[in-house]
Image: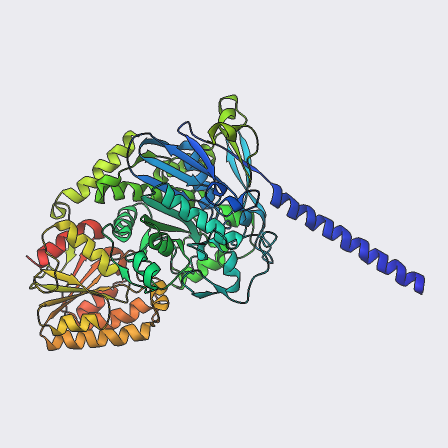
Length: 428
Length: 205
């Protein structure tokens, strides 16, 4: 009897160890998988978050900042990709910008993985694929899906309630690991708060005039397919001197630009606009404007993969976005996006929306405020649509082969620290 | 790059060229109303601000609460005071509920509906004309009776003297039915950025 029990216990232990090993390998793969991109010839410099907040060096929150400076005086644009890694059209749009950008006037700064740590795990407890794939003429490339929050391996434990600094607003406990709830951040705060602070430092130190934050949202969430921009900003001087919270309408209005851009883009795809509430703190569309002089635009595309009522969360759901349950709910008039399952919400559509959404903001800012003109280009929604109609993957069509001889000098591995020699050439 | 320069030129033209050259209206003819007008949001959304932005782009109206052609006020009780001042002849309500903003600003849709009832009451007491506008793309989603926009349409539109909607927000004839039931003229515009600029100039000639 004792022998049988011992055999059972040992067998159970072996099975548990095997399962733990399999899970461990999966976690390891996601944690250490490295993506490689090819920057356009317009790349002039690469910095890191740790150049702005030194304590981030050698942490999983450090990440590269790609700078494309035309050398011609003009507006400066900052683009934030991957604030929430489980919204990967944001990252892909940033990658496509970096690979294809041309700047004629002004400067463009792009962070493709703003929460690098959060991209190294999945939504814990929500079984879904670790990767999705993009097909190009030169091969198939794999990209991470990631989490909404900073990886708990890098920042733990969470408090009972997260209190945003300096607003004092109470937020959900896990929002202490949510980059887009921790702005304006602090230099000596948690890892996520330090990354938030690094972004604000980029905006302030690089003289950013237009700051664009790329997200994705459920179609059961009202603020999907939308620009969010602040109509008012905090009187910082008064707040810092007296603690009094006073908001005023700034001379240059992000919301005016966003509203015009939304109306213009709606001829291509639905793009709503929404005003950032002055009492909802920690988000880019509030705090970037309150704690710097930049114009701020947050963009949301429709990503049904993160809606809670879909069928199985497969790679196809992420890349094609076809789901009969959401179609049912849409037919009953309950969603905030005119969802059509036949078309879905494919990756190219969401990436294209971000690319054109960002470009429209840059164009329209120049129209409202000519002194901020930045002339730059990257692939657009309409160009991608045309490629899709010819039967090709338009995301893959704009990606470059990092192994091609002509690209090797500008191939960069995206990781929390520089990998390979190419970074050295662009880090001053 | 050529495409981009072309896009910039087109974008500038869109603002610089008079909107009335391209405007497309249908439904009832454009009605005329007296200035000055007070602009407000029905639902605390950005709709009133987007109309103000379009009005500003026309460069035909001055903005001042005591001497100008129009003024924007979304806050309560400030908008009560402007109505009570007797300066404004027309009230323009843009139906625009913000789900994000309402909760964050500490008020509910019930509060906003309560405020709007007072706004309408005060405007009528002052003899002001009322224009209700639905101009934000897909502003009525989700189209269920408990949706804030639907509730504000139910409250404001039957009391209005004139209704304007973009075509996309009237695909279910929601505004057409109200127009017919209450005998209120309704004009439908194709697009917000071009047509709304033109129609505002027509209304407040």
